[in-house]
Image 1 (cartoon, rainbow, N blue to C red):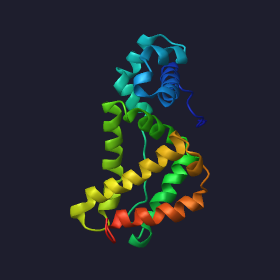
Image 2 (cartoon, rainbow, N blue to C red; image 1 turned 90 degrees about the vertical axis):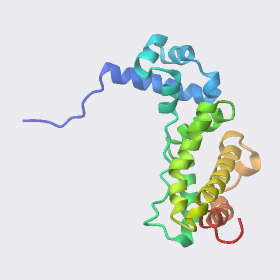
Image 3 (tube, rainbow, N blue to C red; image 1 turned 180 degrees about the horizontal axis):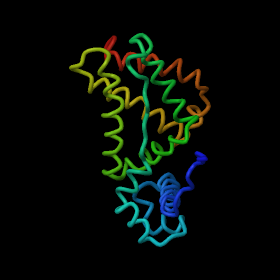
Length: 194
């Protein structure tokens, strides 16, 4: 008789997970430039050569640690009249209730001083925000509209989660939705003047 018990992770898988967790912690605290392979290895209690063995380079390790999927609303299930509201609700749900927010914190903290990290942020928004925005409004200006949506989301994330500006931190989710949702709506659809 066969039992379908979950397979215990191999030593190699556990080591990789340990390295990745150490990298996430240090990238969140110090950004890309402030976290060395040696520091990550020390945090993971392994030899630095093991970090390179499993991830090949600091860039590859960073890319894995900073992996982030906004999972913005599917355009098929979100009508044009509520896309701004749907985007801000999803964004808040990710930042305030998901362990995957760590990836975006890593990216934002590192992007200001590191071109590799900045490119990763550009990739996230080009591949995750633009396609959603392109489904609404004039396709010819989808890039500009997606850029405005990204500026609003990145500004909110920076002020609320990285800088922790007291007035922005004090806002309830309902207040953010009420104030930011209509702005995202206008940006995403191109309704009114941009």
